[in-house]
Image (cartoon, rainbow, N blue to C red):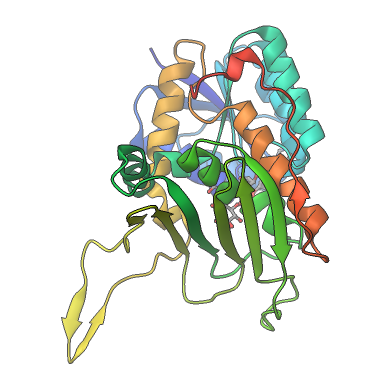
Length: 336
Ligand code: NAD
Ligand code: ISE
């Protein structure tokens, strides 16, 4: 069966997802797109298989030819589209963040839980990345003992012009919140945000040092940098009771020459996580063909945004701020 997909928002990642659905993955076809920038939607549609261009996102959700919807518009617009998909009974892949406030995420959780079956997959693609999967397998395998610390860095070479301070936490750091919850298999109980001297290369609160304390007392430190210039660099290392497990440098090849060695730093998230995006969307198509959803859930989207909300409350003072989650509905009792 071919899943006919409608895409809302065809900016950087929306266009890339249309490309992979059209040219890389199997079992899906993009039949409709919409973007508030209609010219952009027309260019993307013309370049990539010629799906129909519809006026607004709601038209994509309501289109009888669309079996499942991919939302890749700006974060604050996600809630309305995801709720629309749930109301229409259509599987939806929503790019992270699920929504930019925990109140909005809870409205989605409530709507899906009331339906009694999952329709939503959130774009936390790191869970599909082969290196992160190997790291999780190493931690779960028990060889390093119980985790005590997780060191992480999330370094962007630069960010787009519309990027504002809060996005470092509610758009970028949400990945690190999700990875910490997934790797350590527990919730984050409290957050503190420290603000060092600013990077003078941009007018942003940059970098940030974000600390999580998990329910069992594991401490997580995440450097969130928006303007490191040298490339896109994602790091993670779990310190256990008797060993450490960390993401290796991602290079398939290192060149040694003239007394130096050199490897490549990925240019951006598209390069670093290309395989992860392919795997997450292939899994989404396979579940959508059955009218279902698997992988990172609306609950995971809510939990990560709750961490971001607590982080935003800590900015300026660095005070440890509790993350208070609602009781988890039975629908989200298991990982999938
Ligand atoms: P972008 O600005 O390049 O693209 C967003 C597009 O959405 C634009 O073309 C804009 O015109 C369109 N848009 C905005 N509001 C709309 C609406 N109401 N209806 C239809 N179209 C609308 O941004 P981007 O980098 O592609 O990010 C889009 C989303 O994807 C964000 O939520 C972002 O956090 C997420 N994202 C995730 C990853 C990842 O690694 N998983 C990477 C990049 C972006
Ligand atoms: C972007 O939206 C992403 O999701 C990337 O994975 C992340 O690294 C980047 O900081 C965000 O802006």
